[in-house]
Length: 358
Image (cartoon, rainbow, N blue to C red; front, side, top):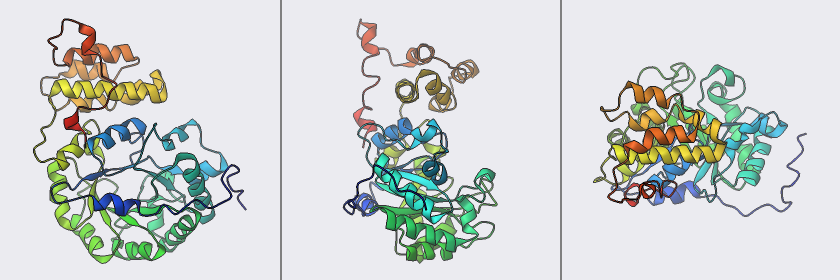
């Protein structure tokens, strides 16, 4: 038997289910909203903060190993489950294949990280996850149903699942209906099989079939890279769309979707937001690790501007310190009429401008 969390309260906390229904109830045809996808190495606290401020319906953490969390095999990277101060609307994603471990991991996540809901990863196709959960569960969906039931009994939170169409063939309707019977509150469907990984195009007709086959909300995922694509995918009958790569280096995509008259920020504003993201990273991870993490993100903030050349990109992907980032990004800011250059730096760690917020 797995020992329960030592410092967890003996009394069962009040039922907190209904998060997904409440968030989705606030949508409209004019303000449909979108969800930030779980992305290993990307959907950390700083990125979630920017996405939430920009109007994401909710955000999903990077996936956490249930076995590592319960048995203590995880290292300091359990920071990926921690909320930033005041964070709300954050779903924590777990992966695993053992009901008892996932139940205890759910209890620990609920006690440590105070998530709005917990998501079961049934879609990760990478080899290191094989046999440990992820997309392998699509080969034995009855195991997945048992996992969902165990998680649901363990915590008074919404339990959801993120699936692919199947492991090598499409059986998404069957799996989704089984998950609904097991008690999920929501299902996210990526429109590829595990065998496809990320090749080809996501099959949104197949996602639409799943949405029509169950009574719980279905979120569509796959190849949504901008707001125009998101609006088109919303016509398939899904409750909302999930955006992953399309939000990296452009968190304003959530505002763009929610506000039809919104204009994509020009270079000075993108540079300011890029520096804010960098400073948030440095605060969260420490300067060296935070800057290293940003090397893959910063060029995406600026890539839409054709005037930014190869030299700037090469400098961004070699950053090691915050002053180096400031030296590269501050010259791109819109020049202030103020004679005091320090005023150009004030507010960089403040919330986004109002037109970039929900």
